[in-house]
Image (cartoon, rainbow, N blue to C red):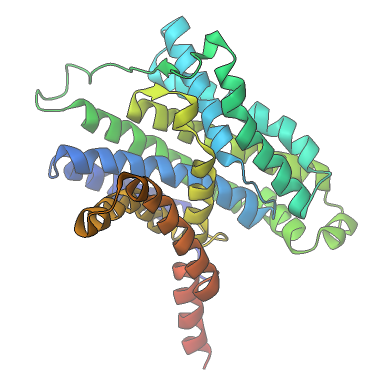
Length: 328
């Protein structure tokens, strides 16, 4: 399979950066906000692809690690008035540390035991956050990064600023992740995922590699959580519910859990679902209870349909068909 060189990947990312610049000025505020949300989900979904698709470890609690990153960034901003990039760096480091601790335990678990452990984390984190005044309790903490620099044009709104920051952080994260996945660590994770016994016999340290995968995945999740907190302007238990973990997992399955090629598909779908649900509810005059639960139903339905019909994701499906035609 043809692989892009580093120079070509840099060129692609530069083109994407220019496209983002012009796109932010060509669409309305709602679409700019949704664009920032897509960037948040791209990073969050990528963290699951790294953990599950490459190292074979299933996490049902990724939303909790987003919460760790969001709270870490907000606390740095509130108590130290740190610049936004410092807040993001701290979010990555704190979430990565949490992931390392979780990874050490996860290295001894697999299958439903690992999934259950991470699920317990997703369920328990909101309750823990509610108990500490430092974390703002149920109301949470404000995360106001301020207005865009004065050097930018006057019509450059705060949402455009969020979109720029989120997009830049996402491009850098994906570029870094692609290089990691092509490194010896990525090859080791694939070996462990394929057959951990054979990998261990080949000299691969299972505990170290599984823990490293959890650590790096958690760091990405922490960045996603910090971006999410910046975009919505607050961090609270309700911003990182259990449903967020399942949404990210659904996005990863839609993207194709073994490749980054379709990650944008999963992210755009997750952002579009609330709007689609609202349109359906308005069309049929549904009650408030139905309207509130319809997005979750759509996410669940998409997950089931994807697993049944395109389990490897649409990008991998198209790639497999193309290779099949070539080999005929």
